[in-house]
Image (cartoon, rainbow over all chains, first blue to last red):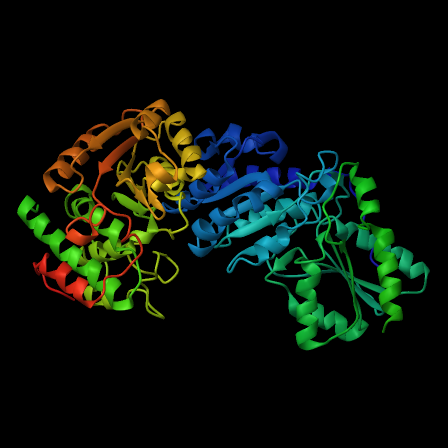
Length: 317
Length: 281
């Protein structure tokens, strides 16, 4: 069993900020837009270093998405920054028509996704964004798991042509993937090898899955852990390869079970190798105020919940 | 450079193209298309500094975005007759597998189109982004966009209008087709727009009114005036007062032909009022 070390808790949004800062220096085509959340999105350094390439649009997300589409006409690579809720549901039609259908090279970067936004409550905690975005034809959907991976993904986006939704979060979480590691869009990362159950996790749930893996081992269950950072296009080959061995799956995500990673995995399984699956996800509900840890516990989105799901799904084989 | 007579003749042919496209598939939007025929002909044949051929990025040329995408018949006709794609392709308007979708799109790769439009209220934002890219690229050319007056009811416009003046987007000319009509009736009865000029001015824009928005000379003069005001720290709004359905008598001054096709008799009447000047496709 591989050992993963938390090198110190960091927020994934700071990984985005660090990646954007680096891109500012290395890619003159990169521009950034923000809807009055520069500090929250950690875009301050880019703004300071490249004021001419930074667009403060105010509290006007619809205009931001349209402007981003327009900036691509002229060769710019726009990165938009606001909360996940205001990056998706609020501006769905703008993204749909001006970005996705128009095939524009816009990177929609969304912080504060999921319940771990915490105390602000359900108005700001979107649990539907992965579903909304993966439904858009041509949209790449990424949900990174820690600071290092978010930084790497941000940098990788500039070299990928096409619209992308990059989802990350607010709280400080374990930082355990390699520093300055590579990031390949659409490529799953196997974190632990196992034989009894495949745990497919995304975002903040990846670290939880690694913790669950340890507990399961103590219970005599060998879990394979896969980090699916790219929900669309989904690495079906990696999933099927693992499932051929384990013959059951737990999916884990900070998102509604409707429309999320779990359903995408279900489709791959149904078409190729139907096996039992359990969903660690919110159950068609809104969030609420609380600390991130309290909310992850209440909504069943932590290592303990993954252990329960794994135990259950192994028994269903 | 074309003279007024040539531009008017060009417009007459565009009117034929509009009604023929819509008639053939018994769908589409002739009213607004006819109202903006003179304007788009002026824009593409005289006002804009364009390059030959089509390049999505539009470097070192003026570019245009159609925000009210439902007037695709006039857009397609003017694009085709300005050399972006074969005029014969107007035969495929709204047909299966056509590049001439009901509303314009980049999705099928139709030269001349840089953004999908149809869901209203998004064009000014896109134009601002493109104008910002031009400034970053040290490209002194202009960005044009056309919106409907009813379209101003969409809130996104006012986000964009506020942004453009606040950020001195002065390489942008936004034209509003003020025809006073929308699907459910006059703009005054559906949702009054109030004083559009005063609204734009209150938001810090320079406003040019073209009272005779179907008169070629007036359009050319008005657009020259608009161009002369660019580069001075303010975005430019042109209020183009048009008659919906202009040039086809039974379609004029009513919202009835917003999204309705003429029947065979009506087509014959419309074509009789607009004899061939270039050549039919």
